[in-house]
Image (cartoon, rainbow, N blue to C red):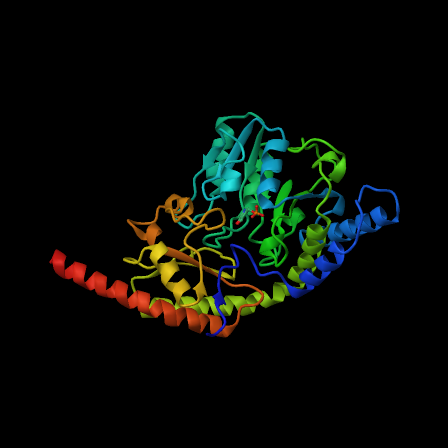
Length: 378
Ligand code: PLP
């Protein structure tokens, strides 16, 4: 059998060979980075080198980088730790933002899945309690990019702090914490070709107050207690360096994504590329095919050796209608028929062809069902 086709980079990107090598070396080293002897000092140096690489990816000061166990923890640290009374989150955020704080208020999105700055402005004018606003840079399901700079300007005008989940954007489009104008930014290593279980909250002001979610030791400038995950952080640093260099490769991924969508839509004229009318990540396609349930599509593609996701598959295995697509107000039943195809550093042209070969059969069956239900209805 030919090699399987992995088109689920937004769920987790394969670990880059250079990362595996760097992590293996780090694993072979002894030492707690808090120890003062040479072993500890070496471990500390490795962490600080990684911190610089991660900071560079986000255009930040290394002192503002707080390493965490991943994007989920970084999001919770931002929203719980900043101490603001009101928490406003966009309707299309990842669950780790939506559920970080009980009682968070939801900012509605338009049909393209974008937050309109005027909608946020009205919410902030209505209630002047100290607030934090959380809007992601790019959506994990559709790839739609939010107008974060404009949103941040509105929030700051009203005295609110701004957090941005840039987990899916980093390494795919330029991410610069200063240019975005946000106070806090979340990153996760495993979307960059690094290991799972390590991420960072990046602070624009390295001295900004932040209450730790995990109190205890003084690690990470007392913002996140616990012995650091040295091999994971080293892998994150290596992935951040590679991802920064790889930004130029995104044009290649965009061409593959566009070819896939173009051919799929020509094959199945009732299909839709969700979010295509808005600025999008170059690597992501959310393709809805009326009459073909997402879970069934994912299973059939898997049988054909092609891995994609139905909605947000990060947390589950379950296939529920996506809250992102529902928030975008997709017309009747379309949200249940959407799959996500996402490319990454090891994707090849052949992956597009393999996907299309397998998907063509699904599209033919759906077209057959569409025709027979139309006959029945008539
Ligand atoms: N934020 C977004 C947009 C994501 O897509 C994900 C994971 O898919 C996360 C946060 C969570 O990151 P992690 O898996 O590192 O906890």
